Image (cartoon, rainbow, N blue to C red; front, side, top):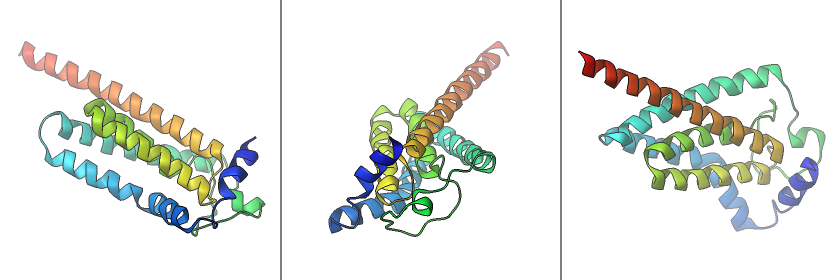
Length: 176
């Protein structure tokens, strides 16, 4: 099933120049949109700044978790085992989970808790990033779905843990 969905998406790569351009752009440059949003939110005041700090911390956690998973589990990328369209050069490391997708979903979920409007936009960009990684021939759909689920979970857990810590810290301040 994974290969069937992969082929259905990837077979279009190299055939529609505009879509190839768009998928390469999203795959390679979406992270800069996330950085821009994080910097803007960090420079703002109040809940936006707090959300940006949480998202940055959660993203670092996601990168670490991704490295650990890739050390413990190796899944060859689609272009290693099969003849597929590959639009941009890629590493030959483990395909699972998609780091681009994982980190973008992590940040999006945390930002969503701080700013629903920006968070929704970034969640769509995260989904497009995952789709672009399949289109480019770098990941199977299961890599992208796994990255989204793991990243979303890290984002949710980070938000819940830091939210509780901030609440407890505020209550301690009131007692003094």
